Length: 59
Image (cartoon, rainbow, N blue to C red; front, side, top):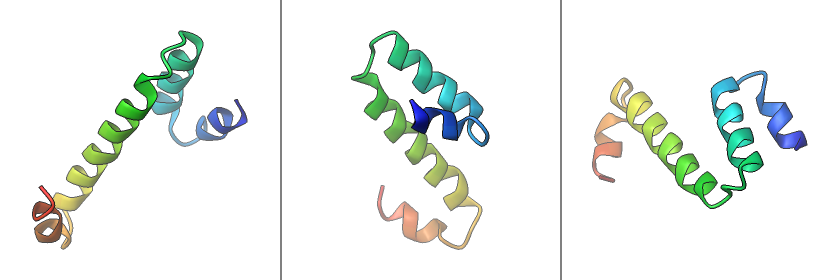
């Protein structure tokens, strides 16, 4: 639980989602949602930087 509390300051929505999944015993969804969040961050930040062409080759 201390890991979840450390995220509260910076990533409030993500930490609340993880807390909900933990309390509702939906642990199997945590890896799927984490991967989706990471991929969406790569796509959002990758299109606005010079790394865009390199990220597009991954997909």
